[in-house]
Length: 127
Image (tube, rainbow, N blue to C red; front, top):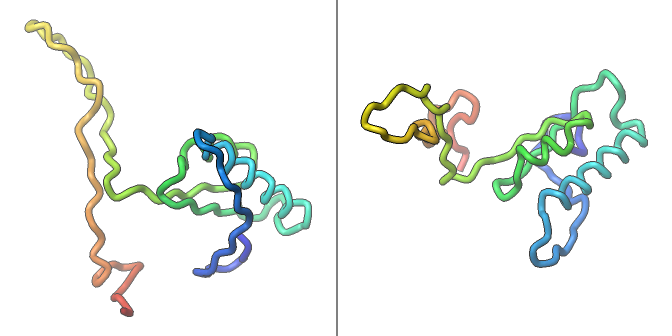
């Protein structure tokens, strides 16, 4: 968020001790909104510039944060937990003479593990 070029460096912008039961997404949204507003006020982002890329770790509710920040020039990228399950759309309802209930969810869609040794972007590991 602080660099204009690609970089692996990050900077902690703010640290807040949350009370038990605090709404993490709401607190994060306030912090991000204030940071973006400071960048705009300082002239670090202007109309016509690419949107600011905000990268969130797996513990954040990226879809909700993206919705709450929808009025700002940001793109939210959130990492998914490795055990997260995505589902395909619910299949269309069909008449069931046996009286079974229609499915509430579509079939599961799991991500495949990445083999970085032959990945076109990640390339071979340097470890």
